[in-house]
Image 1 (cartoon, rainbow, N blue to C red):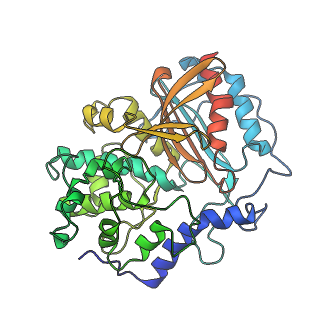
Image 2 (image 1 turned 60 degrees about the vertical axis):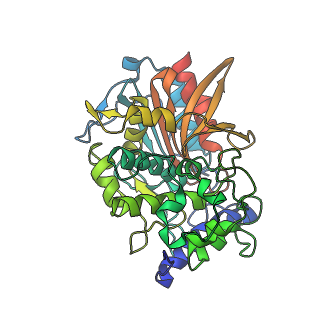
Length: 410
């Protein structure tokens, strides 16, 4: 039986992270300065930006270039950096722009990052830079679906059409034949068909919020499979974070490896990613929010990998067919009031950004509080934003729509 036996300190950190959303919403955010939560607009912003320099060339695999070399207009991006400094988009910690495979803009700010600390859940005020590992929240989901494709490639999993229950033999014959129709792809498209209430009730509602109840269950997988089947699997989208953790457990069981070890071997090392953290239980299972911490430059590599059909530096790291499948809008969603999402693949969001009369298609890996990897195939561009917008979660998309995309479309 897969049990949730873990030390109380880790459990406190996990629950704290899950409680973060309603707490900040109820309090209207966290004020400014060194107090709790994310600060609002800066009272004394730094001097205005008047020009943009070529990012520093390092040995991390990125070639850097000037904006003009990749046909990006400078003024919209100068405006972007000045609006960030004024606090227009609240707390932006990092902005990366890559075009034509070259890193052309790199900017870092100041703020506080969620770290689960026992006092108020945030780090002290800090200056972010290119070597800061930043928490990516639900961007982690897109890494998970990529690892699923690699586990299929490596022969650990036959295909995404395998039954989830087949990886949990301890539940054989326990939940009926109907639930054998819940396949791995349904976990990744959040379409398991199970009755699940995660977004429609407060996170702190321990009695009704299924994500919280799943997390506290002695056997989380039994809680998951024990929910009523109310839709045919694969037909109805409903946000279900537990399915993400179940997929992580499937990969762990299939490969016999910790997720961070498997990710390092198959994904991060080929991309030249040398430093990352993936928070997991001591026995190797991933806890509910599944946070990875990465450098923004390395987040951009993941976006570029998608843009290049799974190749990096001449090596086919991820099968192109898998990325085509995983980023396709397989499920229709209607979250137009929340970042304008229109479709969902295997843990990838799809939407179109409106820039004047143009609609620019995007493939997005998005996480709470302003973490995003945005891939724009028609522009040959990748944009990464990190932030601490725990009270203004939509600001990173507005920043990109208002300033970054116009630089490429003028």
